[in-house]
Length: 432
Ligand code: UGA
Image (cartoon, rainbow, N blue to C red; front, side, top):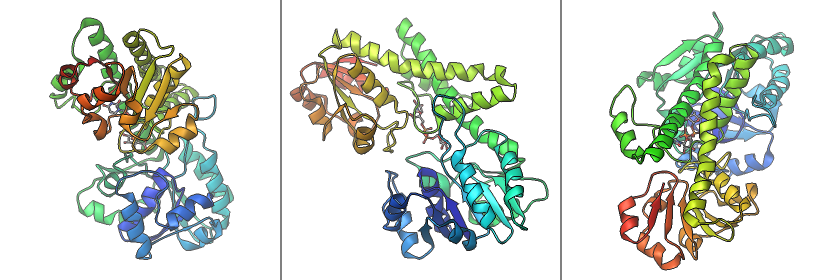
């Protein structure tokens, strides 16, 4: 099937390449020429394992092209995916929908045939209904249907999550064409047994935000228990393993540490709260205020742990290993690791950061931090070594080699990912 994908960021570029991988003829659309030039050359402008191969294969086979022309996009297909960003508004909890609105305003008047729009971006409930009204005002003698097909991919596993999802969710209006079109687009996944769950528009929008809110809640729950463990001298990692054995609880997303970050979980729970408030249903979501609060508290707690371990932060030399919000990604949006690094620096420490993939993005966001070219270089002369993103190369660091270059012997594990015994036997004091 011919289709377009608007937005060439993490979500859009992955979706475009993966739809081409399913055999469709895809035109990726973005207003950023620089980003398009990279993609056209087969370069993914961010780190996502496996995506460059899928991108290049489909460009070479002629199924994937890119354009910044909305006229070309409108003429190309009757199926359009909208995968542009919905970041947190500046100074507010709500989501900024201006990129979605801009796509609709520019695309819809150009459509000369009936079309189905599939929203993929994460949006506040009610957005699809609002856009349906807007589209009907903008469409010129054509029937343009708005449906919502939220995405559940994780950065670092984006290709696998798109090509082998747990479920497909589709919000549609009764009697529309979207379900039939979606069944055709995703035919090979549905044959493989992936369930397609069809709902109304509002439910599909809420499925997405509720999924992320639940994941955030799970992380903050275990981090709240970690606070009690710390006070009581109990072991949070052993506790997580033990409660995670219960299939009703499950072990995933029970890793305590410096908490969640990234471009999705933090802004999605805030947008959820803001929207619930607008709808008068805010009481139920005081829970999420606490989830956010617990999460932010982890970062300050980490600074306190480093202060206690180092005696003082002023003049203390600190190696921060990890800057990405999680391993497998170069994304530093709302990264707990960089936030902690920044706070330590503000408190007078000399901080050196190293990350295997997120150095360029970190330098752009925090130009005043010092950066190294390797983990060992970052540890040179350090009084304390912090592991804040659990990249495999940090998990497998050899404590004895680090001893050869560091000045102090404090190892601080922000992700419960290190082997405590190994570090302690090499003479380090382990904190988590
Ligand atoms: C998240 C969801 O997991 C995806 O399903 C969703 O599609 C995506 O947001 C989105 O809305 O686009 P992602 O942001 O890639 O995916 O990252 P996660 O793997 O969910 O991790 C989020 C954060 O939680 C990371 O900072 C990670 O370090 C932290 N985390 C995760 C913990 O602190 N503990 C855990 O046990 C698990």
